[in-house]
Amino acid sequence: MSADLVLLRGIAAEAVSLQEGAEMIIKAVHEGEPLGEVARHGGPLVRSLFALEERLPQPANPELRRYVTRFRAILRYDAELVHQSIELLSMMPLGSPRLEEQRRKLGGLGPPAAELRRLAAELKELG
Image (cartoon, rainbow, N blue to C red; front, side, top):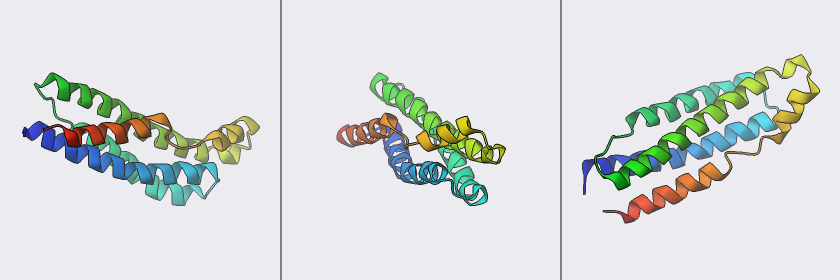
């Protein structure tokens, strides 16, 4: 088993576990929880997601490169969605009905979360 595959499996497992926290942050924003509380947990989560992206290998194996490409996109999506959700919550004091409507539309990470779990499961089968 290649070192890249081992590393990628570890990153995938960590990313799947971080998604639970991301879902909780997005739900907290949706529910209008206090900004300080949400940011205290969300900021480190965003940094962790970006740090995972930085740890992704650059494998020579084309099959693994396909996984890396998808993981990179999903990790970036998750990090940006959590970050933008917190930013949206920070704008609530403006009292904008449109911003309030957008906050209430937040519903989680969506299909990329399921894709990440599927890809992580596929990686377990490689080897």
